[in-house]
Image (cartoon, rainbow, N blue to C red; front, top):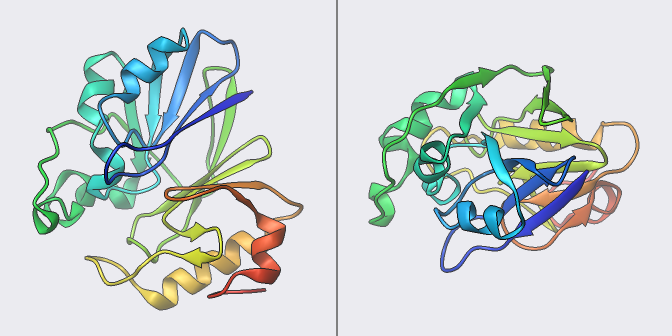
Length: 201
């Protein structure tokens, strides 16, 4: 499995392109429409898009990837936020092109997409239907866990107590993972367990 990290231009989230065969790809958090061009430049055809949560800065490219033929999935509990006003686009004066959610996944579910096994963990707190996604030794944490930080909880459906419980749920995973957050640089789960400035083991 190869992971390409696509940093945003302007304000948006990190996007991640994952491929097992160097032909087809899954994108996690298609933050901007240019993710389609980023994939094509690498010879990749995006077949699926997985959302860690539905805030506007993580879903701005959903319409573009869906128009290119990808199917979009999120945790069932996050579907209404991603498609409604609680995605905070209006709050920040941003317009998200309309799109549809094609499938949903559940806490603890595993799906094989483009030859890659994805496991999903419900991690409410930043939003009520937020999720973290495991693939190989990578853990895609959206806005639940950052390098040295955790997500904010003051936007619609956010909850501080839930976020603390969700981060501790991640810390309880066996072994170590490369943590790929929605914003900023990568870190490791083991480092965050013992050094995170907000929530530690």
